[in-house]
Image (cartoon, rainbow, N blue to C red; front, side, top):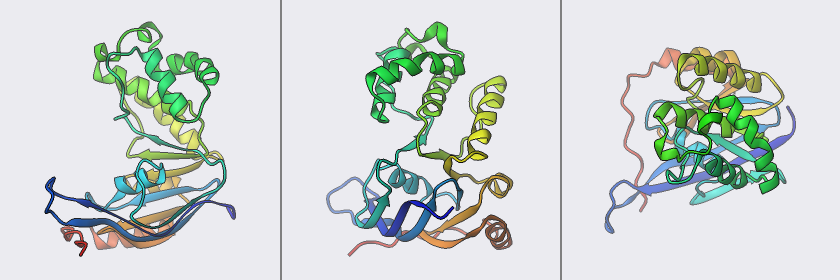
Length: 241
């Protein structure tokens, strides 16, 4: 794991907490620096509001930093596996799948070739040509997960997802994610589960109040995090001048 595929250099990002012109911006993440190495599974831990989801959005290039630099190795693709994938409810599962796969860098031809695998993995072949607005929450979760797992990115970003949908599909999706994590796939895994991070991750990045509190081998970070406990309230974000 010597090849750096992505790195943060003093990255910071701020948002307005209130939606009005006069409200001050506050740092959600500030002075974040770390390297991600090819083939490793990097865990991310921290309490609610620490900035973990914002970090994933920066990693996936959904948002850009206000300060600092994010380096990505040439031609490196990232996929955020999120069950809140933005579907057009008026379009079919087939059409949404094509759009999502193309957005992730697939050609239309490649996307069409992947559709049978998406439908099969999700067990939703019978509704692929129906509008997504008619899907149940479980069926949308199956479609979202199946699309994400078939994009084959260089870096897979997982946000607190180790199984979705009904019991049968949770088992199937969990097995697939564990297979990815245990392969040469580069993975960033956000989770509140200490045992999950300790079991699957090479290193863990601990985010506290929007900053890097610790970055080290999984066992060492887990010991420190467990010893500190998680009941201390999180301080307010620092306001920008």
